[in-house]
Image (cartoon, rainbow, N blue to C red; front, side, top):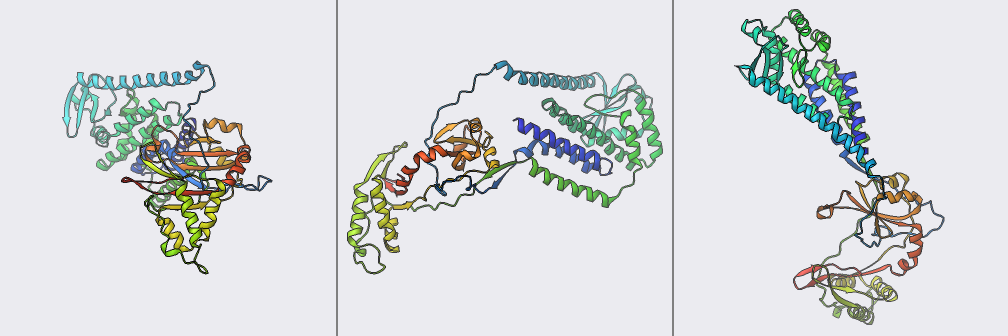
Length: 493
């Protein structure tokens, strides 16, 4: 969470700096409005974007030449034990959240109060329908302002016909272009992200851009820039701005007057718009989540066939050069497989065949298997039996970048030597302490109730050395695939 917030703040700071330095002085107001709104959404979402970066394992860290299962899962015992955090002062943990909640609550109440004040004022005043907007006639001398499709103007000025047409056109532009929605959106965002100092720069930039858009609309109807500028100066001196509304404001009038006479340069604008695209691509790479991973070789799937289908051997009894194993060896193979197959019930209540035998006998089965002809191996696979031998385990450490990436609990669930541990457990190790690793992405139901995206299985050097001999002696895997009843099942020793 802290990492996400830091990325959001820095990214929004860069984007608003880009606006003030490059875009604000250009007469492309609609593009700038879209930029201000979309850049806020971009800053909030880009930390969720993730890229997977393949890295090479570090092999030269170890002096010994003992190795790892290349492309195979580390045998891991799934555990369901929960983690008990280290005892801490509960108040110290809760205090930042209490402060955040208190400030957000105050800002939310202030926001609701402002909305209520405007709506209450409207209910007390006389309203005149004017096209798509409502003219709300307020007693007293006020500066005209707009909220949603309501234009608030002084009642006495309206009755005496003192309200100038340019002012009405200006406020109608605010109402028709729904500028109040932008203001409400940034106010609500500030309620929950008030600790981001750049949001206040966004507020001012959005309001100023609204004035540019409204001024542009007025000048397209009344082509008299000097008179309009004088009217702005006179109006800005009176009254004060109303929160959550679009209104005349003396503090931004100078920029508005300068923008009215600015000459538009299309080529420069296209160049700056292209620069925005380049910046967005660069920030996407910088602030997105980089997932360092090792590319694993693809594991081929074995076909599913009947487990109780007999191993055909009638046509394979004649042995000659290149014809595979003899009939006696084939019978030895068949007899060993059948006699060492037992049937067990799995968690779903299905009966599964499982081949279990001593390592020496497994080695003998694999020896016969590799001596078989292609036709003999095909008959064996068609009967639902598959043999393969795992590679000799070899140590390979992760890169330092990959090791640091594993500490992120929102990305990885960590198992060390077959035990599920919190990601903070990795702080007790160095990257060179890891001898073997494997990760798999969670899909579908496997993601339910988990905040991480990958399951990571690690083996330390000590555990690797401790289990090395056993793994060397159990490299042969015999699987039997088939149906018991009507449902297929896949089995591995």
